[in-house]
Length: 250
Image (cartoon, rainbow, N blue to C red):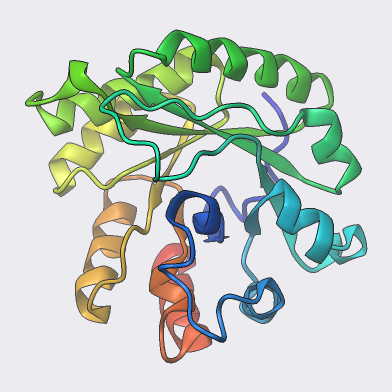
């Protein structure tokens, strides 16, 4: 197994996610958090394990000299929300070698499990795993069930299946949606085996509601959270960060 020490602390993880600009456009941003430098400041001051950027943002805002202060997880694929259809495909946009040049400590890639284009994404992901592991670089699989094949299927089983698929494909960490309950997430974690599970923070929630989910995530045995909007849309991002760290690490 590859070394995860650059993106975890005692086996736990808190990532600041900022790859929403490609997926959602500018709808999540205001005059402050539209600036990647603002997000970098939160990540560094809040002592996150890593920040998640797409290639273009990393090229222009992440200096590899920052690596001692904040690790970079580079997202290697992405799509917009403008092209409609029940079976999504998120194409490869960046390579492992480019990620290394940009100073990344790990790479991430979305697989839409159940999409008609699933085989293309699993093929791309498998090559990423080969290339990254050759460099002892961790790979995180964004494992999201999507597509006509998964409509009306049990969400608990789908997310557990996606997590298991990440293990089978060689992911070191899988990033999944919260399946709705402690028992459901326990099954997801068990299904992932030795692959660590990180849960997506999702849309902005009321603070106590969101922190309750984080407590459940840690009780289930997951490694931690990848949080974006619930931090950088908060009125007090550092205060929210400290509350998250208290739950995840202490």
